[in-house]
Length: 225
Image (cartoon, rainbow, N blue to C red; front, side):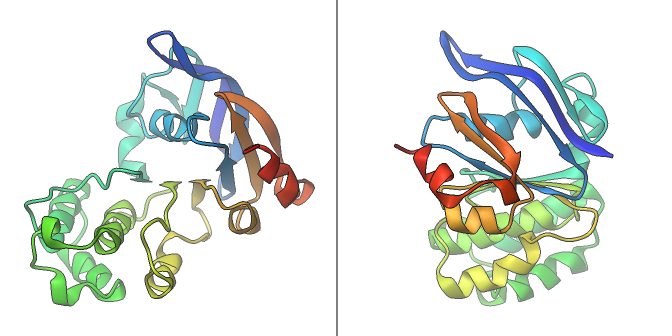
């Protein structure tokens, strides 16, 4: 099964084209690592896949459904961890996660288990606005994975995390049977190590698209020059 199929995808903001003629295919259960400098189109690509942005040209299929026409059938099957945590700052970590658990029909006991795994039980009742950026990132990770999504969209998932927090987060966002992942990264070595496929973007266009085993760290680094 193909989890993601893009054909000639284009998306623009006014006269600026953020993505242009992007074509790729990601089999189910594989990990796609997306590289490119700031403004290359990585976050825009994730937002299109997450049904948050509509493509202006081309076709987009996610988990066997055509976007945006069948976006309703995809949203509950994917998890997004973006630059914005998509959390309510005046609610506590526990309240945020319980809200999302109810949306997805997930048992509230799952929330407590995630708070424990992420070392957040002691601060679970504190308003999100009082937490450090690293703690907020942990809660955002929990929100993205609490419903066991088939497709996980990760934009710099280790941002703001110290080494100890990364160790807590890795088992939740890592590869597992039946899970497809798209990871946007600025770290060529780490991103390449966990990828099956690599997409390099520059100026919204595809500069590199190959199996991870056929790509070198130096090729990825050259995207940023």
